[in-house]
Length: 253
Image (cartoon, rainbow, N blue to C red; front, side, top):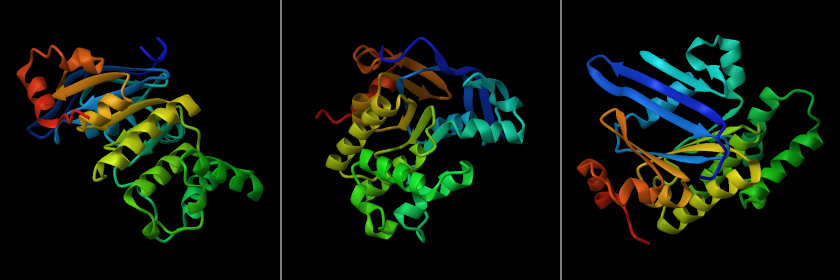
């Protein structure tokens, strides 16, 4: 397994419902330091709910969510905000501010959260990260001038500017053409190697899962039905729902 035995996320017996809708029903999951973990599941399976609990946007009904040694549900506002600075969230829609240039989008979290930086230090940091995602020339462009894949890259760069220990990728290849999907998948691998991040990739794209994941976890009916390498999860899948998920989604490239 890529990564270490050290756990940066520990989920134990996690339950979450919304009224009569049972979303998570006794979930157990670990993320190890330096690992890319893919959480797979169809729409509505609870993938996004899981990571919202992880960053304190939702609270579980029962069970525990330990992130970087902290019990998320027990944290006050100040401690939770401090924890969130160590978790980078790459949104499905990139979440760039349309009225700001790429430079201004990149500056925003840095200026807001890191004090006493000089203008030169800020510019150097922005240029370094834009270079790492292959878009140094985009620094003064507006989001409307960028392609979908470029917006995804800029969104990742902006997330990295606070040097998080954990990266959360929410459907990173959604809405992209196959060639751009491969580029984004390669970027996820590159980020882990370059910045020593631990990552959770939320997706239903099995090509993305196979390329980026050291380990896969399949979420069905509120529980993880299979965990392991891509081959371990799908080659001998006994649960018909896991097999059907593979047969429906996977594009053999």
